[in-house]
Amino acid sequence: MNNMQIIKIYILQLLILIGVVSIVMDAHAQDDLDLNKLIKPIDSVNIFKDERFYSWCSSVIKGEDGKYHMFYSRWPHGKRVL
Image 1 (cartoon, rainbow, N blue to C red):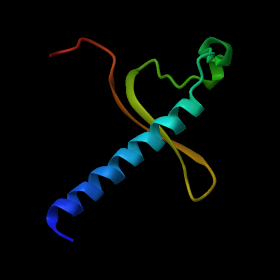
Image 2 (cartoon, helix red, strand yellow):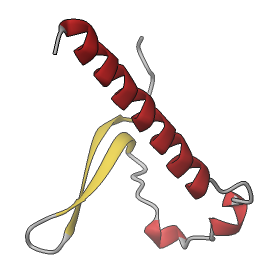
Image 3 (cartoon, rainbow, N blue to C red):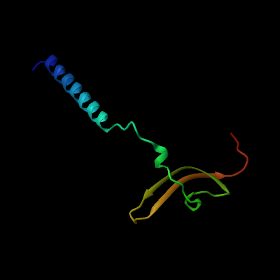
Image 4 (tube, one colour):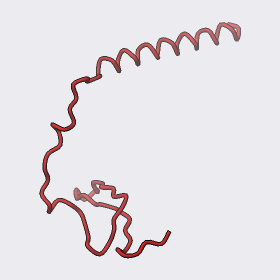
């Protein structure tokens, strides 16, 4: 095979892949998705807050011990200096 034939084969494969992906995406699309129905009220004990600090960028992971751990940034309440 020469280089031009190889390029044509790659282009054909790419077009087939794009077609398959678009078909799969259409099959999984949900036009009737209503996120408001999925949002439920939460109890205030389930909100992480500290009156002394601002918290930002929380990230929760499940540890090997089976417990959930939250990592976050924090800084003291007070006057902000930019």
